Image 1 (tube, rainbow, N blue to C red):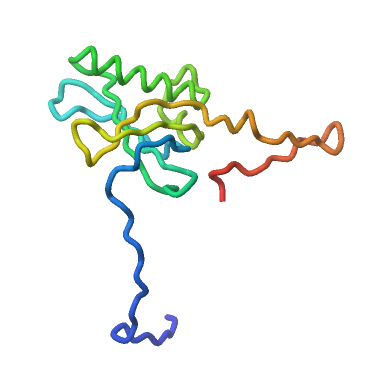
Image 2: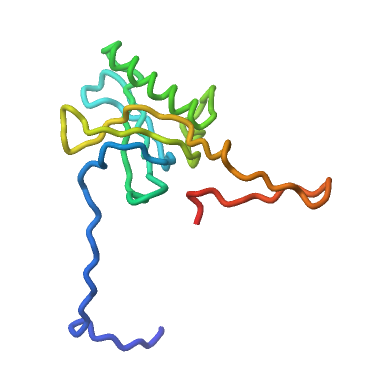
Length: 158
């Protein structure tokens, strides 16, 4: 047991800003996939992949967006839209032949979000593209020919 005196009644906590629950403004964001799962649709007639995206840079760093991709749906149009978006995400993170949604996790890419036309309280993904950090990252030459190259931190790593 550790002794610690604390008067809860006399403590006034500093105000903390509450995180915004509204949609992100229409823009392009650097993101990573934090989590993914496959779920049944409400009607039970298909399945969707749910991706949890987290913004990793800028003013909205830490905010999340849930993208649902109807990969098995009675509507061919819904399936085509979902598979097109999944294809753009796979290409953006360098996974051309995905066998498990976990392959998409923790790889930075850019996503353009807009306000959903049917529900103004939600975002919808417009496009996904490579973040481009691999092209602009400085190359560090090894000190010796047999020494491994130094690894610089990625922008989303603290």
